[in-house]
Image (cartoon, rainbow, N blue to C red; front, top):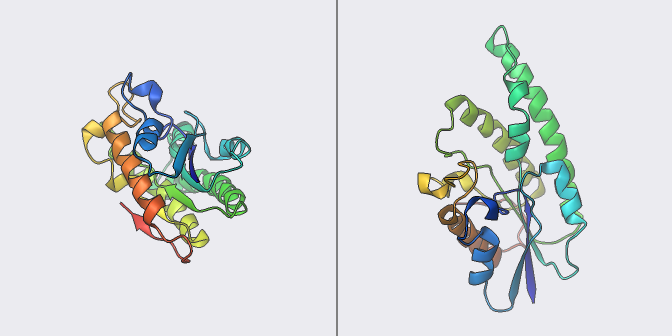
Length: 209
């Protein structure tokens, strides 16, 4: 028996934003292959440093992990990123401070996950959210750079949600930063495709979309 566990934030824990439609975990459980189980430990609102608490609750029979976190880390930094500056260089100084904190927390999380020695997939932060302003999209690119560089250094496959949730209908009407059931199905399908077909015995990072 293989047991897939979803860690992270509301990208996976999206039930509150889709009404009676199936959430990502339900969609995953419905399509998982025979001999597989799927569980949700991701928590709506969690940032990278909080995933440690989720890891402590991993079931003993967990065999595969998928992580999606970082969006809330970016949201928490909005006030800091809105700090008035005299020029672009000073603005980059502010961004570098924000990113250094996220990088520290994300790398610490990856070290903890790597120590488990279980097949792991990480996700980028999607950026086609309806109404997302261009400066914020640029900022998300910097957060995604941290995720990608960390994944490469750990040799972990990446699910690039930026290239998966590209349609306005992929986002919840109730809260556009969350995946709708349509977007959740796309995410779930890609998770299962990668987890079941990626060769985790081969070193190196692959990006899936």
